[in-house]
Length: 265
Image 1 (cartoon, rainbow, N blue to C red):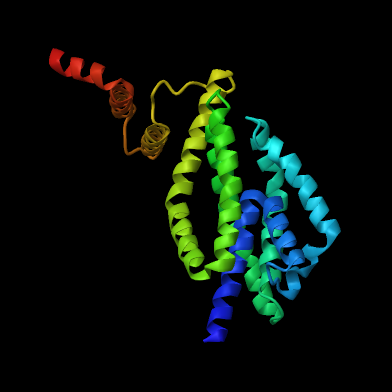
Image 2: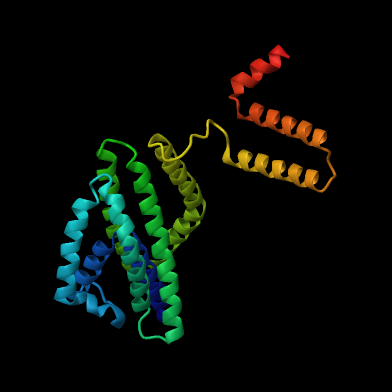
């Protein structure tokens, strides 16, 4: 029974440390370092280095920097981009250290899983904050940043004191992220496309779905191939091309204009 509880505790700490590093690495390091040095947290041998005063001091200094940077709209997204190269490796290292004295294969596996979980939480945080920054007011940005800090503190406390509950919550988070991240990525791409169009860097799509445009281009190339092979005559090719262009124009018109055209017919 004790070995089973120890396994759950190790798994919860591994997942908690890597997840928290993707959200706020320095807060996670402070919680683990201060908790271990004060005797409130029994850290495994691989994480005892976090109790070193130099590590605690560096984590505290960087946490204060991130505390203010993370609450500045626009600057926080740049910070998240730079932190990608820090949070993910740190999440992998924390996960590998949290499993304790085990075989190298298991330690590497824990590092891979920890890096993946850190990447998931980091992508969710960074993508959400990027969308929040489209709002000119700073209140939502501050609220999101403070909520993330509280989530790290609450998440690590739950992982250390109620490992089963934390593991279940992490499973819910992973399942939710599988559905949320693709939609979040599409919204971010749409946002960047709108910004590019506003700045004149990209052509306006005039309401045309890019997938419909790609389909139309593919059909046009197929018609050209049939003409080149002699299957279609030049007159048949021109008629088919005009029909394809006409269909594309109808699809690109707003719904109200299409209904008006139908009534005229």
